[in-house]
Image (cartoon, rainbow, N blue to C red; front, side, top):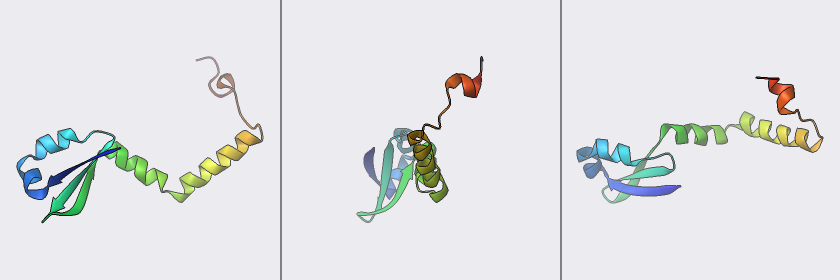
Length: 83
């Protein structure tokens, strides 16, 4: 994940270009009076960050890993049949 920095005044004057420059793996840091103030991220990246901090989601990962260790897995055919 890369970061880019832009001042609030430059962002105000170049909003469309700045938003175009933010791709899935980048974070655009906005500064005001020389201090980091806000960040702009791609919506998909934001959703990933929110999901990664969700306790229920993290619990489900732990449970899934335990199922794998116990051999409680299904084949592709068992799950999807003959598509």
